[in-house]
Amino acid sequence: MSLATKHRSTAKKSRKRGRRNPLATAALLGIGLLLTGGAYAAVDTVAATAAEESTQVDMLSAETIEKGEALFAANCATCHGMDAVGTENGPSLIGVGAAAVDFQVGTGRMPMQMNGPQAQKKEPQFDQTATLQMAAYVASLAPGPAIPDAEFLASEADLANGAELFRINCAMCHNVAAAGGALTEGKFAPELQTVSAAHLYEAMVTGPQNMPVFSDTNLSPEDKRDIIASIEWMTDNTSMVGGYNLGSVGPVAEGLFIWIFGLGAAVAAAIWLTSRPN
Image (tube, rainbow, N blue to C red; front, side, top):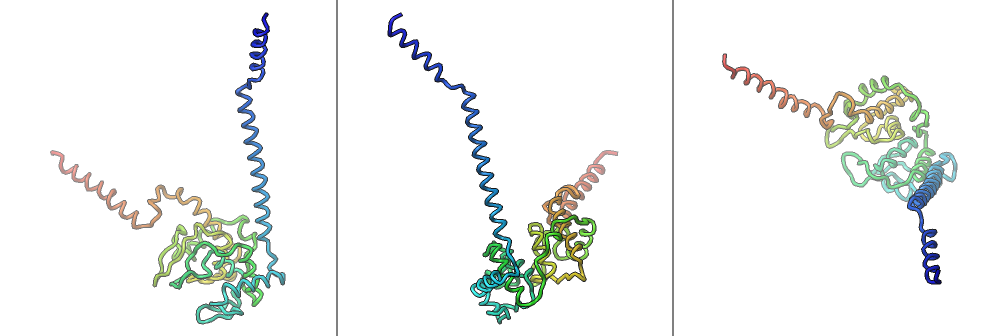
């Protein structure tokens, strides 16, 4: 065998040994994706844990109250006064409690964007830590409703009792499906389907805007928990009750549907029957 032939044979064998199996490429790609996904999940978990820890504020500490006072003086005192005693532009906050601050600031209603019949819900201006610091400061001025404990937001609840209490106390303004409704003079009862459990509880104990205050003598903490659970159930199961919901816009759409299609079909049937020869 010549030297050139031997060289070509050696090069061909070398190329065969160096050729990678297609399955090996797929396996390497899969391993890379798994490692990348695992690393991302680990980083995301760490970030979520850090965010959760950052919102754990000691509401009774002097440092928290001092920071809350500074935030209040810079952002709220123009309307509510330096000592939260109120001005001609805003009411006193003495005795409203931490729950009122957490609700109003946490839902973006405060600071108000503009004057109107009632404060509009919008993207919050402050993060949860700053909100709790201001709430701690206002709570330090005088006793008032506190931010609810987790046991009244996520524990087991009586849905039947909550639905009955909601129908009696809330549905006349907020709609039987918690979809909200219009009030007088440009005011309105907001929808409750996208409101967090904590803010629902705080609204009941503080009575924001046109809403009455439901103290523990009116509705016990357990009753409030049941109402919140019933609202969450309605939100998750609205499309399952009563067939097609016609957009959930109420009796007008339902009446028009019956008038146009129901009575229309009855009239058409009557005309067809009377047009038949005897």
